[in-house]
Each structure stands twice: as structure tokens, then as C-alpha cells.
Image 1 (cartoon, rainbow over the protein chains, first blue to last red):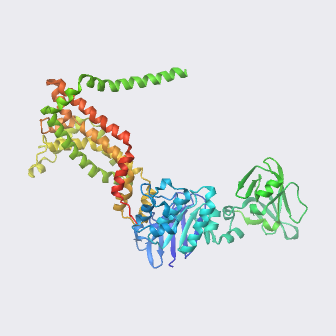
Image 2 (image 1 turned 30 degrees about the vertical axis):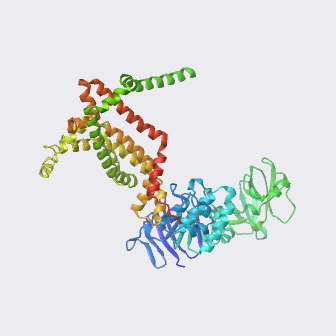
Length: 342
Length: 273
């Protein structure tokens, strides 16, 4: 399997996007806020947008090299592109969509379990079915690289999990260099072997999802990974702990070292909630009023003015939590990470 | 206050409708159906009908053939001066037809801009059927251009990108994606342009004259007849209204998706397994 290599500079309105990456037979996800230029990277690789300078190659095949003036046209690059919202041809049925590249569609329709939809028009399909057609079409010409732009964004929340699992299995099976763009860290964590966080045109961190969760390089990455990021002041305290002040009077302790302005990084699932501060080994207890409760699958995200906690739906029910009620959020000093503010 | 305003709106609508329909109704009240068929048997009417159909068909085919790819380019490409080009294309819309006729004479006439070159080729255009075709094409083309550019601009650019990544050449993208998806808008623009071309009068009169059987189209025949034989003029007018109504009703009743789907099945044959 030949790797995809690129080293690009793409001028954007507010900044220049600079990104160099080598993608082997794996799925790499680029995550970041919208407007970070993630889609432009995919378009540049596919030949739909022209980088200011740089190189793009697939194995020994050079697709773009500003130095020697190589710029292969999209139809000459071996790229399968799954577009945002899928971009299926509305005037063609499923079979004709998949066959657009001039390939017999039967095998792909079977592989993606959409044979029964062969004669259906895209407008008659569900989001998940559309995604499968888009993937089948992208794979039709046996591309050497697969590009996926927000493949989960057009899906209903209740089909998302299933479709994501299927896409994950397929990507594993294909073992193609695949580059995926998403604004959702959870999608990236499930689908990708490595995740890159792109903010304002720069790659802040690239690593396995667990690595990004476990040791985020900066507050941005932590926020994308779903953490509470709280700005405050850190100072050394007794017993090798660091005292962290925020919101004027709130104080928490962390086992990590920091001095001066810092960001407290705390994952919602590391926070537990109770009616009264428990007298246990947990060092940090913060009292506050519940702002809102949102159920996500079998869990409930409980928003307090200063942080968000994620507890099981069963616990939320047992505690009979309601907005406006006061609760105590507790977490251990080892779970309170400190990062320098930027 | 509210009911007064509602009454005002209703009154305005009623006045507009009555004003627009009154002449049409008047023509039909003056022309019994028998006279209509009689007028069709009339030499003047028959000759004018043949001239109109022939010249409109040729002019319309030329407008579609040249206008469609040109509209596609103008819709897809961004280049300096594009706005100027788009404005120039619409110029004939705001010109009085008489000015168009004078302009065509100044360009293609014996002493016109291209007069010597055309003379050298042994071509004489003014006051021939070719002149009618040019006049009709000149006045109807902006109608087609405007609609066709809008239709191509409405085609989602991502679909074009998708086709490119699937290995389609620009020509294939045009034939299999842009053209079928723009078919509805192109059809509507084409109908509008055709109607405008059929009704062309001023430019044709000045550039091609009104010679029965050669350059006298239906509108010119109405003008020629209305002094000698008002009833024939009325009958031809009635014929026009019928053709126009037929065009409109077809457009509305069947909807453009029908036309589009006929087009699609021809452009994109299904690959059977």
C-alpha cells in the first residue's frame, strides 16, 4: 500500500494553512473548528483547489509539485472523495451514481449492502443509505487514497452510532490511506487511527485518540477532546500540590505542576455529582446550581456555571436532578490537569 | 384599516387582470371559430406561417447551439471583465427593436461594416430570409442567455467536483451532470426565447422588409393586413394567442421536470447489470 504524502501551504482569508502529513494504510482524521481549512486540505489533495506551494504525492506518483510545476487534474489523480452531504447526482439512481466512473456497480452495491436500492433515486434514501452510496461511488475506480469530508454530519443522531461503526469496519477492511475531516472529536476518535487537531491553519497535535485525550498538548486540543477548559491562576501549595484559582473565589487542587496563568483541563466523565460534599479521598468539591441537563444516549450531560459533568442516566435519575438545584461536583486532584494558557 | 388595505390589493389585482385580458377577449369576440380556419386558408396567412416557422426554427436552433455552451462558460468561469460581458449580452433586451434593425443593417448591409466582405463572398443579407433569421436570433438570444446562465449557475458546484474526482473530463461533466441538471431551466429559457422570436417585428421590418412568402412573418402579416383586411389581421392575432397559450399551458401543466426527465434518459443511459 503506497502512502499519501503532502506538504502544503494554502492561503486562507485570515491565515495561511501549513500542513505536512504522511498517511499510510490507516485513517487519519483532521479535526478543528469550522473555518480551520480542513476541507481545503482535502480539495487540494483531490486537485479541486490549488495550493500556493508544496507537494502532494501518492507513492512515487507526484500529483502536485509547485517547485517543478506539476499539477495533475482531478480526473488524473487516484482519489475517492466522499463529499460533505455526499453530493450524489440527483438525476441518476443509485446504480448509475456508482457506475458514473465507468465501472460495473454490482460488486460495490453488494459490498456496501445496497443492492436492493440500485434503482432508487438519492432523494428517496435515508442519510445512512446515502452515505453508503457515496462511499461505494468513491471506491468505484479503486482509488489509492480515500478522502472523507464530514461523512457523519448529515446523519440523524439515532442512526449515527450504527453508521459510524459500519464505516469504521469498512475503513479497517480497505486499509487504504484515508484522510477524514470532521468537527466532531468523538467521530474522529472512533473512526481514525490518528487524529490531528487543526486550529487556525496549524496542526496543534497529532496522535492516537487516547494520546490526545490523555495528554492534550494545549487547551485547544483539550477542548476539542471534550474537556472542560477553565482559565485561572496556578501556584505551588503544600504536599506537592498545585492550587488553582478561578472565578474569583473558587479553588481546586491538581497534582500537576504549573505557575501563573494556566488552564485547568477536566473531562466531564471524571466529575461526579452529589447532593452533599462527600467526606472521601476526593480533594476537589465545587458547589453550584444546575443550568441544564441534556441526555446523550445512556448518559446525561449536566451543565453547571463553571463546568460540565457527564454522569450515567441511571445516576441522574437516582439523584432526581433538576435545573436550578444546587449540587456538588467532585473530582480528584489527579484528574485535574494543568496546561499553560495560550 | 386592515380590510381597506385588503380591498385595495384586491382592486389592484382585478384592474391588472382585466386590463391584460380585455384585448385577448376582444379578439376572440370578433373572430368566430369558422373565420379562424378560413384565415388559415388565406394565402397571406399560410405564407407568413411558413416563413415564421422556418425562420424561427433556424434562429432558435442556432441560439440553442451557440448559446448553451457559451452560457455554461459564463456561469462556471470567473474572469476579469465577466460582469461587462454579462451586461453586454443583455443589451438587446433594453434596445428598441427598431434600433436592433438599424444596427443589423449597419453591420450586415451592403454599405455596412461587413458589407465588402459579404459582397466578396457573393452574399447579400438584407431583405432576405437570412436577414429574418438574424433579426430573430438577435432579439431572442438575450432571453435564452439570461435563463441559461442562471440555470447553469444553479447546478451545485460540488456535483461538478464529484464528477471530476470520478474521472470525468470537463466535456463529460458538461454532458452528464451540468446539462441534465440544468435542463429544466434551459427548457424554460428556450420557451421564453422562442416566444419572443416568434413575435419579433421591428428589427425584422427594418432589416428584412415585409415581402410576402419571403420575409413576411406572422407579426408582419398582421401589420400588412390590418389596413386592407382587418378580419384577417384579427384571425392571425387569434392564432398567435392560441399558440402562446398552448406554450404557456404546456409549460405549467406538464412541468419542466417532464422535459428534464426525457432529456436525462437520453443523456445518461442506465448501465444494466
